[in-house]
Amino acid sequence: MSVPPKFVAVPALDLKSQYQSIREEIDPVVRRVIESQMFIQGAEVAQLEAEVAEYCGASFGIGCASGTDALLLPLMAMEIGPGDEVITTPYTFFATAGSIWRTGARPVFVDIEPETYNIDPSQIEAAITERTKAIIPVHLYGQSADMDAIDAIADRHGLFVLEDAAQAIGAGYQGRRAGVLGQVAAFSFYPSKNLGGFGDGGMMTTDDPALARKLARLRVHGMEPKYHHQEVGINSRLDALQAAILRVKLRHLNAWTEGRRAAAGRYNRLFGEMGLDGFATLPIERPGHHHVYNQYVIRVPAESRDGLRAHLSADQVGTEIYYPIPLHLQNCFTAMDHRPGDFPVAEAAARETIALPMYPELTEVQQAHVVGSIRAFVEARGADHSAGEKAA
Ligand SMILES: *Cc1c(COP(=O)(O)O)cnc(C)c1O
View 1: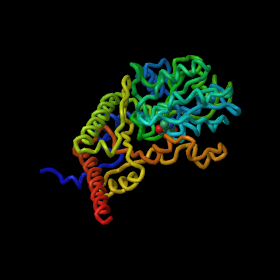
View 2: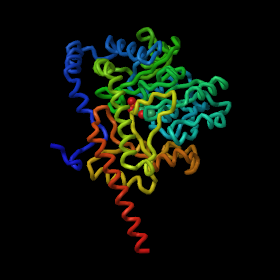
View 3: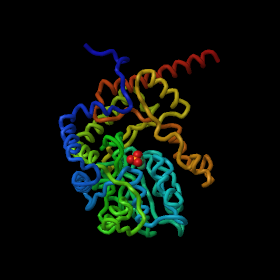
View 4: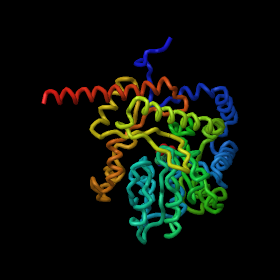
């Protein structure tokens, strides 16, 4: 017997079903770490570092406490600080710009491309000054930024490129993976990321041995060897429990990524079948890219967005807005003196986008419920319109 669609709840994120599918593998490794009572760094962390580096095609992986620290530590390693500028996108999670600010440097924003929501390389050069030291492109929602164009600009101006790959582990670009598309990359193991731990965690990847060594030192207060401090670092260690869990999950990552890509394909088909491609702009995968769909984000008319979200919520469909306020308009950055209109593409995205439920375990029945609910919203709106026209 089929379940009436209105009783199909579709949460924005569903981590429990993933845990259920692998608990036989996870529980013993958690027990193993507990029995060992070795919680900080150690062999599990070293193995995860090697495995993530290999997965990305990088020479070195350096674990740390979060994706945020994985952005901060490379900036510290490059000795970026007061008086310096770092170019990035205003349309990202706060940590990208927050980590620049923490060093004392100034984030310099460059608007995004409307189709991918990633930084627009054609606008970067105009933002470069003699103070510019680095570019942080973000691979937003799981699709790589246009790295050939960005790396070419960085080469011309002698800039350092730090990939914010927090949402993009496994994302492909011209046959390579995120993690080797700049000098260094930052990954996050926050639970909602494609490779999520049972708490916070992060990783940096690089091919540069000197940089790898410095990053490994900076995460333990600049200490090398023990109790000899070469520079002032921070405490940003990855713990062994997270590493052990992540090592199990990494073995499933490619299958989960295929699950996400299949789910994205089903959304695309359902939007077409239900005649909604005029109402919603769907995410695109650029040629030469391998999108890993950390999020499936659609764009709808701004005046419909919040109403659609409420309608979906009433139909038990969870959604999220990534991101409602672009970073140049955040309260903490008022000193930068930005105004609405400074980055119009990012501002439009903040008004028009909505992230639909996306995880590898999503079923066709759930997705049909999501898209069916959107169709019902659009049809009701159409009826309102014609009622209004008749009355006029
Ligand atoms: C999640 C995320 C981060 C920060 O990662 P944490 O592990 O939460 O510190 C940074 N940048 C982007 C784009 C992210 O999505």
